[in-house]
Amino acid sequence: MSDQGDRVETMGARLLDALGPIVGDRGGGLHEPVFGGNEREYLAECVDSGFVSSVGNFVTRFEGELARFVGSNNALAVVNGTSALHLALVALGVKPGDEVIVPALSFVATASAVALAGATPHFIDVSYETWGVSPEVLSAHVRDQLVWDGERITNPATGRPVTAVVPMHTLGFPLDGIGLRRVADNYGLILVEDAAEALGSYKEGVHAGLAGHASVFSFNGNKTITTGGGGAVVTQDSELASRLRHLATTAKVAHPYEFDHDDVGFNYRMPNINAALGLAQLEQLPDLIGKQRLLHEKYTGLLDQSDFWQMKHEMPGASSNYWLQAIELNQAYAGERDEILDACLESGVPVRPLWKPLNSLLPYKHSPSAPTPVAESLYSRVICLPSSASLV
Ligand SMILES: *Cc1c(COP(=O)(O)O)cnc(C)c1O
Image (cartoon, rainbow, N blue to C red; front, top):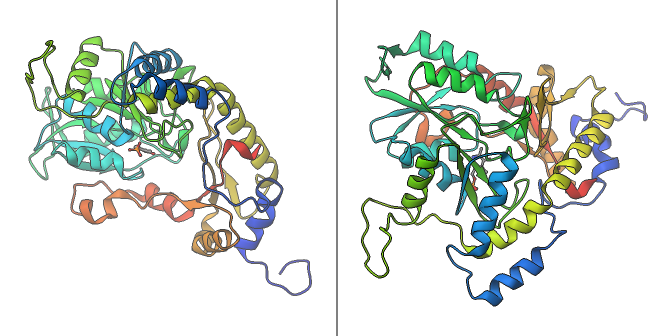
């Protein structure tokens, strides 16, 4: 019962009350872009130059600035994050018939990219601490459920080789990339980090995505910065970077006029017009991350002392970009999740659940999977809050 007479307060009403000071009646989307810099100028410059399509000055500048920001030797800008994952897996040698370890809790693209490469996603659980794959969960799974013959891993249930792992930095909370790389190296696994949500997130001062053989980012309209649609692959390995570039650019052999292609290539390079927008966004990235972190402090002030839910915070040693803010309902209120989502959406407050565990989706429900109780529990209890940088 609430203290306002005999009205029984619903959980949805409780959350709406708590969010009021930040969200008010602004409406809008879950995570909207902010265009507060040189966007118009660069877009006009791009149009005036006539080079709006693939490969141009802005692409080169965007790739250079992105590599510098994350601290990588190489960055390749591509059409979106899903194609970045697909390209990275293929360039690193993932083939039809392989199995690739993927967290059950992720946006669908992590699994789609594996399937598009002709391989089969092999799902494992995430940890309560990071909401992503931990080195401990990964190594225990390989040790206890798979067969390592000193050279390669086989899934005894299917007889297929397990050749790669794609951990994902959930909502921007950075994983222990170095620990994951150690496990991958122990077992000869390719490590591709899905850092699509983690631009500007650091673990022990190291940017998310630097530990993988290759890692990917997304610049979709709802991400921390946007290029309209876009993504990138980063890698410290310059030979791999050349191969990624070649495969992404139709595998064309350089020549003044001959159309000679020496492999099955993709047409995945980012157009210059998207890179123009992206360069302007990248210039504002430190400011945007500061705003997302401030928004987290504000939400924490309003939501942290509650009997009904807890705010999700970064772990010690981690610095999150807080791409999406989230609360975790206490177990006793898991059954209220949909009532809360409905109440907020009806009031114009954009909230979302986490993704349905991927091993329950139609295309993947027969894929190999470990038990995934943590992914299922988080899915049943987490609510993502309005997270636009413009809210602070
Ligand atoms: C956004 C996202 C992607 C890639 O998204 P695109 O929309 O293709 O740019 C991949 N993985 C995760 C976890 C994401 O959140």
